[in-house]
Length: 361
Image (cartoon, rainbow, N blue to C red):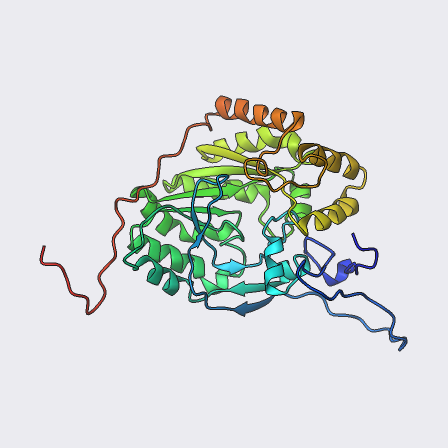
């Protein structure tokens, strides 16, 4: 960590995940606080959430990673106000010339035309349907969704095209869209993953300052399950020395709420996230920082993080093997090990629009 890196005072960042706002890795200039000699006792304003808008050329992003069970995803927003300190998507803000730190939580990008662009993508003659993962980078149901409604608009397009979708979120606004999700689930077109990192409300508030409480997320699982939407609980990230003692409790509570499957991912610290995480750890849990980082480095060959495919999600070593074994035993005992039914692609259709030539048959 840079010794001259400005640390934002707590009063200027209420409810935010990090106190740092470092330059992105592509920036050639660095920012530093200094006394300009004017001796003014000037109070700086708090960091507010600022939203800009962009029109994407395409909404469906492709990937070839063997670590995930989908090859395409859709993200209505850049940045995320939930402020989860561990978020692996933080480094993406560097491509915008912004910081993966406070900028990621406070300078958001919305895509109001997302549904329109998505529909154009689906209407291409070359398009072949496969499950779209909605919310793989930043949460599609973060607070600004209440204002923009972009996620709902995209879901309605996918419903009209009978296109399968898997949603991943920790945001309560998913309950608003239970009508669309239930309709799609009844056709075998939708599943939802709810992320529950820990049942410890105090720890969750520090890790994920603007995300719903663990109890509220369990209620989200219940609401979706009661509506007939298959729900998977994501017990992630698993943090050695902080959240690892509560894995089985999270799974049991999620099962009782209605989850039918469980998955997990170990804590990931790509690029600038490592620096932010170590600062957060030293601030909130200085007595455990050494133990947590030692275990992480042990699983990544001595580094804070190793991004290799086949390694980055579950890691290696005795500790990683122990977590995997514990999780598997709990899955089996709680009945959360059955595979969810495959979402259907055979129902896909391109709805006719006004003026289209209709088929005679």
